Image (cartoon, rainbow, N blue to C red):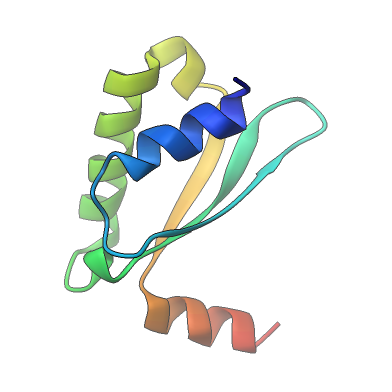
Length: 86
């Protein structure tokens, strides 16, 4: 299983409400992307990031977690507003 698949599996275990993952592998082999879920409603960006990274470090270990460059966390409304401007 590749890192992208491991990341999706680990994120899926967070029990987020209807999550959508948009992840890509960079040319250097690192992974980054966006997680959209209604579960992020009412949470600050720092709380969302802490939730994601604490879980990823436990599930993947620190060495693999370092291969993840960024995981942006958006609510569906934030994602709609962000992507509609592109």
